[in-house]
Amino acid sequence: EEFGPGRRRYSTDVPRRGERAEDDSYKKQDPVQRSKKYRLRLEDWILAVNLLLSWDDQKTISAAEMEEFLSRFLEYDAKVKYRITPRLTSEIFLRGILRTLWDIDRLLRVMNPGEELKMVTAKSPLVLSILRVMAYELMWTPNCTSQGAKEGARDLME
Image (cartoon, rainbow, N blue to C red):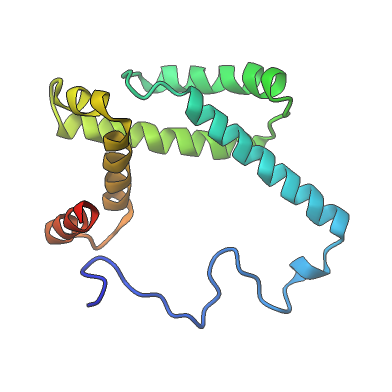
């Protein structure tokens, strides 16, 4: 295949996520309501970016500590620093992002025992980002094989 094993080319005749069909009710929606939804979605992303910026990725923490960090962020930072009142959906969205990142970091620590991971990532945060992206792809690609992982790493190095 052109994209290698584990990757498939999507048909262009099916609308992708984010694209809307011509007869979709989204266009018929009241502009004020559409603007409000857009603003709420934007607020969630602002909170997500600031949550990740304040996350210490060099420190190993437990699930309980992660929940405490998220609660503190939602109670203080979101409301006081950024003046955004988080909704239940905001909390679910942020918890999903943080939990996925926490799982990926835990997987990387298990697969790279000792201080090896810290030595490599302390010099360059970009290395940690690349490892996270690769781990995420391996976690969520259902038909990825070891050969597919090797090809992905080779593609990334090129």
